[in-house]
Amino acid sequence: MSVWKADQAQLPLPDSLAGRLVTYALRPDGTVLQRFLGYWLVKRRLRNVIGFSHIRVPLLIGPALPQESLQFFRSLDIHIHTWDKVANWRTLAP
Image (cartoon, rainbow, N blue to C red):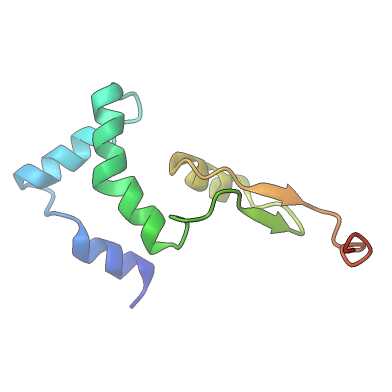
């Protein structure tokens, strides 16, 4: 099952009370309460589904991600660090 289908199966219907609460919580210009609800209702679950719930500092070795991908991860409070010096990664090991 893809990540999209797994997440869609867990989200409430858009016209239900829970669906309206999720829409309210994910507003980009939200208050502290909206950000809190957005984290606990959607972001925390999505971070777990894509495997980022226990990672402290994600490191990408190689070329940087496209801007759209970086914005997606930043919206989930995941700040990916990039290390572009791939050629000599073995020389840095002890």
